[in-house]
Length: 367
Image (cartoon, rainbow, N blue to C red; front, top):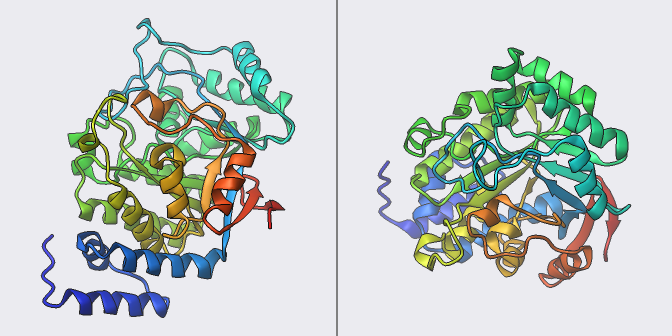
């Protein structure tokens, strides 16, 4: 799409007026913002919207990332985590190994297990159900955030069950919410070019729609910085916004940048800080019906994440313990942060740190 603007300053002023009046931005507005180099104005507008929604609070959670298996039938072009069955480095943890790992890292303040992994066709659906059940039986007070929309679609295919039946079985085992992964960019062109053989855009959206109708609140992501156009980024946000209008089931939006294949890749293979901050801000402006936008320090790095709190972000993610997927692709950030480090990070941006649970209920405010 080519947008011809005879007076860019006038166009920005019109968008600013919309934001001030709480009017919804259009596809054309979003593309214009991406094409503008007026980062500070875009950031100020996003900050205004975020302050209106969340005040000066920035949320974080004590959580742990878990990866049951890295064996995957899909070969997405951007993924460096996956392995084939039998390949060096491939693994699939049994329940005892899962509990052993968690036991070494768990502490009583932990409130969430964040579980993602490969689409491993060599184990049955019951493996995935039982893995959650074992965790919930041993850690009943920890919320289980598990299995992306793409994984739910995969479970449906290998089990012959509908999305609803899959989600009900998982919920009965202890599932509390779905993470936002598997969305990548929700356009057919992108998914074809990037060899995304897992759930289609419509299937991913339908999984989350089904979850929302069952009362399961979920997360949403966008994986940007490869072959997608700026218009495709905006269309991705608009699809999420449309589903949110329908169900109000998304709690947070997480824009994640693609990581290069390894840590030695130069800056030409990474998204720019300019693009990262602009994407945070535009996300906040476009997704007017989603309460939070997350600054994911694993992708942004800690200092840029700190800046993002004045560009529309209201969530700093969590402690994580040991992140693997982005780091297998060359992320330069820490694999996790301590509670004190997160509080320091947020206070350093002149914001108020708030410890939360998975559903954004406040546990402790660090004034």
